Every structure is written in structure tokens, then in C-alpha cells.
Amino acid sequence: MQEKLQALQQEALQKVTDAADLKALNDVRVAYLGKKGPITEVLRGMGSLSAEERPKLGALANEVRAAITAAIEEKHEALEEEAVNQQLALEKIDVTLPGAPVKKGNHHPLTKITEQLEDLFLGMGYTIAEGPEVEQDYYNFEALNLPKSHPARDMQDSFYITEEILMRTHTSPVQARTMEKHEGKGPVKIICPGKVYRRDNDDATHSHQFMQIEGLVVDENITMADLNGTLEVFAKKFFGEDREIRLRPSFFPFTEPSVEMDISCKICGGKGCSVCKGTGWIEILGGGMVHPNVLEMAGFDSSKYTGFAFGMGVERIAMLKYGIDDIRHFYTNDVRFTSQFHCHE
Ligand code: 2U9
Image (cartoon, rainbow, N blue to C red):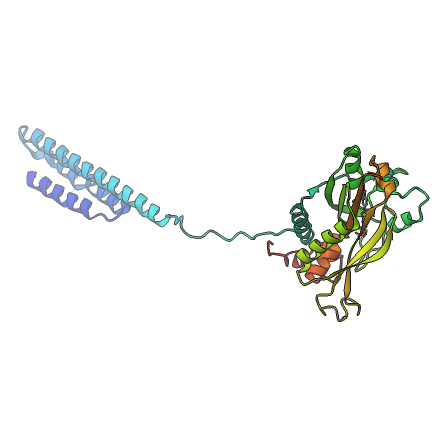
């Protein structure tokens, strides 16, 4: 019986060693240590032994059982560790792999053009001024030499909130407010970007809301030559060094004299084509010398100070720069349009 137990132990330990997974190991446990297993069988047959031999064999059986149990526990631990390691190997994350690509957005073309224009004028020493879109009649019209009866108000029909409050029709009230803050002391050198509103019927070239950038310089000894030089630098930097500019006489209530600026047509080089309607020139902006009435109303002595101002529509500039044929594209927010402006100049 002793030999049988020892043989059983050897056999069981070998099977424990051979068990390839937790299931096989459990089968060994059930087979050798279970109630119907061979060790229990041996113990059951102890009745036929002498009183001397019985405890010896009992002790041996317990040793065998303990040895097999210990071997199973050890193997169990090893197999579990192996299983965890296998799982870890399977779930290993390669942190050096490139991530899923994130779709990059881009700025709206009007934002881009505005920022490009801002950069250009910041480089010439201007600062940026902003003001309210819901504006008082006084700053939008009156302070700009457009009294209530002035016929030029018709050209800038607005959305009125009350008799005295309206959606601004240009960014010029920002200049008027800034001048007022200066309390009659120069220099003032600002550009004012922002959204403006006019009661207009929308079509390919008109929109009831659009963006402007206006500039204003007020100081002693400012002349038309300063305006001319500034506009020339702007035109060449923005549209290309090969562009020529020309100033034509015009009229605005807030400037005197007033001008409109054209640049030579890039498409035909000045010969005349469909883009410039055969003239060789494309209208870009308006400007002029600040009207003495405007200077005085803002608290500046017009015998000491002079100034120039100019204004442009950002949509028009963007349309010319990118060859966009309909102003409504800017406001319908179709990503097929807005996503075409990916370059970050
Ligand atoms: C102050 C004094 C003078 C701003 C000016 C223009 C000429 C002009 C238009 C261009 C196209 C507006 O977007 S547009 O329709 N602007 O032609 N703007 S002078 O003159 C000012 C402004 C403020 C205190």
C-alpha cells in the first residue's frame, strides 16, 4: 500500500507538471484528491491493516495528499500568472503608433482676410479699435457730418431699434468715439474692423450685413500725400508689388476732399478684361481727408489738426483676392465653401 501511495504521488505530480492550463490542472485535482480518487480508495482499505501500520499509512497518505495539493497550488499560481502575462501581451498598447487623425478646422475666409489686414496695418504702427454694433444715431451719422436731414443717409439705410438707436451702417462711429476719448489731442492712428448692417436687398454683390475695415489718422501736418502713400503700401503689400494704384475724386460727407482708390487689374495687367470691365482698374476702397466738421465735433481744433480716413468692405477684398463670385457664400456656411481656405498665411 505504501508503494502504491508513493507511485500515486509520482504519477499525480507528473500530471500536475504536464497540465497545460487551469482546466487540465483542475481535472488532475478532481482525479487524485476527489472523494472517488485513488488516495481516498487507499485510505478506505486501511481497515485490513494492523493497528501499528494504520497510523503510519494514514500519515503517509496525508503527506501524499499535502504534496499533491501543494504542487497543484503552485502550478495554479504559475498558470494564473502566465494567463495574466498572456492577456497583458495581447492588450499591449504601442504608444509610439500614430493617433487617429483629428480633422483640422480653419478660420472663416472673412476672419482670415481681417487678420491679414490687421497685421498689415499693425506693422505700420496702427492700433485696433472696436465698438458697439448697436449704435446711437449720434455716432453713426451726426458726428460724421450727416445730420438728420442729410440726403446721403439714404445710401446707408439702416435697421432701427428706436428713433435714436440703430444697427451701425459702417464702423466709422468707432473712429468718432475714439477721437472723442482723445479729448482734442493727437495723434490718433487706428483701424476699426467689424460687422456693419444696411437695409439692402441681398444679391451676388450686396448683403444686409457685411464687414468693414476702416482706418483713421489724426495729427498735425497730415496731408493727402500721407493717405496716398499709406494706400499705396497697403495695395502693394496686400495684392502684390506689381500693382499700381490710382485715386479718383469722389464724395463722402465725412471726408473732404474724398477719393476712391483703384488697383491695376491683375488678370489683364491693365489692358482691360471682363473682371475689370474693360477699364484695366478695379475699385478697392474709399477715403479722404477728415472733414473739419468731423474733427471739431469730436473736440479737435481743425486749424491745428488734420487727418485722413479710409474704408473698405472685407467681403469685396476677399472676393477679389480669392476669386469668389457671390457674396452670399460667406454667410450660407456651406463647408464645401468655407473649407477651401486651409492655408494659414
Ligand atoms: C471718421 C472720419 C472719416 C471713413 C471712410 C470711406 C471713405 C469709404 C466704404 C468703402 C466700401 C464703405 O464698405 S464700404 O461700403 N468706405 O469709402 N470710409 S472715408 O471715413 C471716416 C470715418 C470716420 C471719424
